[in-house]
Length: 112
Length: 142
Image (cartoon, each protein chain N blue to C red):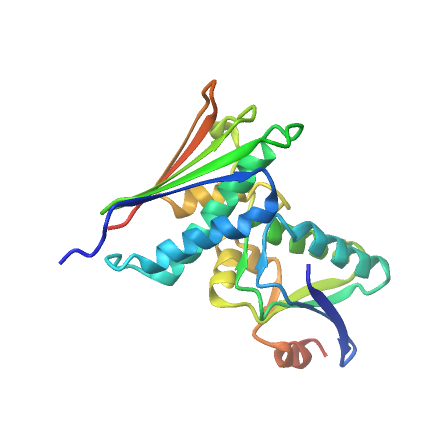
């Protein structure tokens, strides 16, 4: 799993560089997120601009991260979802569970 | 003139998740190239990518993991008005009817794969046979 983390304006932002999240790399993403949360970075933004495809295991990895963040009184939000990827969240109603932002500027405006 | 030609794609892969990208990409290309499909071809391409990925993942999960030579066969049959995906596995199989629907009010990390297949396609059957199980998925192209 190709991811990078950056701290911008006080937000812990995880940039997913892979175009595809499926059962081959979703466990790595899940572990990466859980590791960040264990390190105390409980307020996370996952920036998904590069992600063209996500399957059920990818949604599961993000949901796992959200639950772990919330368990530590934190939050995991998403930004820059491509249309087809967003439609997977809508189909599973997970768009009601995650805070989903158009881009990072919207994150900074709303969560700052 | 009808430009669609009936054809089949038959792939046999080892039971390893690194091949999911390949299988999904085949579905995506097929969806995008169906010139006679009047619906949203981008959505169809994504859905075929997703359904093939989920069905193959499912077959790998149910495969005989102790056998390094175990394989999953994926057959995609493109006809004029229908696309049929058949995924063959050699595992113990499962009962399609007893797989619960996801609970949207209390979402869980697992169990969304078959929901996607059932929701995005027109029919799904799973047949257990001695020589291998077949997950058959049909999508109308009209």
